[in-house]
Image 1 (cartoon, rainbow, N blue to C red):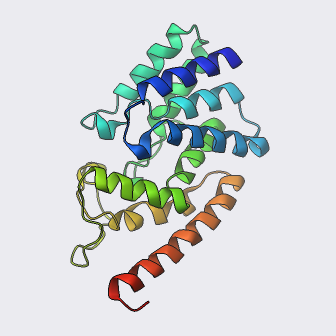
Image 2: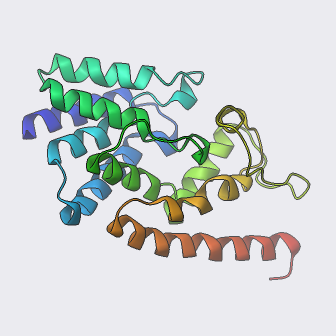
Length: 215
């Protein structure tokens, strides 16, 4: 197991060497660590969890013209090339296909304890202090406004509208980040999310006060 995990780490580090800062190796590493932390109380399949966490963003559709098949295809080709057990490989690919937020309205087509764990770990990295940093980093990467009081958040977007949105970065707090606390799957994930959610609420209070020049 350790050999395959190490080979996967090396592969991901190479593939994401020039990735955008919010979706780079360090994001993968944090999700991997959070997955292992959550699994201490959930007792899922360690191999499936670690491989899924490491490969979940190997080719994020946001950076591949919205193509959601490239990531699973690359992950599957890598795992097969390493001689990974086909049952484990298929489980990992199913997790990768179902992990994303995608506007928060799509139902899963697959369920497992391992998906619950890795999805929670990925969502934890989208909230709190790091979630805020990642959000503004991506907004800058896409040359979006930080905030525009005239453009309200849209909480009724379809999956395609969500993917194509060019709204100011602060809107993303309401369209995704602040929704994640209620979407966590595991008790450990929920506990960590509560603290990170409160940090974001406090941040927004400070942000608006500074924007209006009242604090």
